[in-house]
Image (tube, helix red, strand yellow):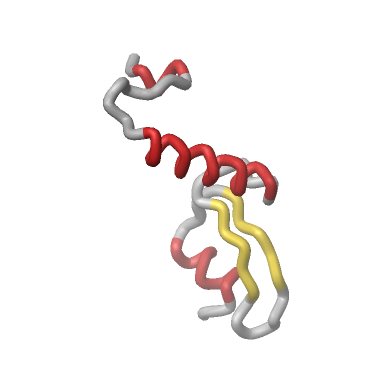
Length: 68
């Protein structure tokens, strides 16, 4: 196990980087993201908006984005 497995950070991380990670986490939580990747998109053909939470096979991703 590493320090990251317990939610802590290595001692040599700069305060600036820690602030950036915390800001990114606040943004992530504010949009309800629950996985990586988390994609907010608009289908290129239909104009329909949607969310993709987690990974998809390339063919499915293209289909949802209207690229096929």
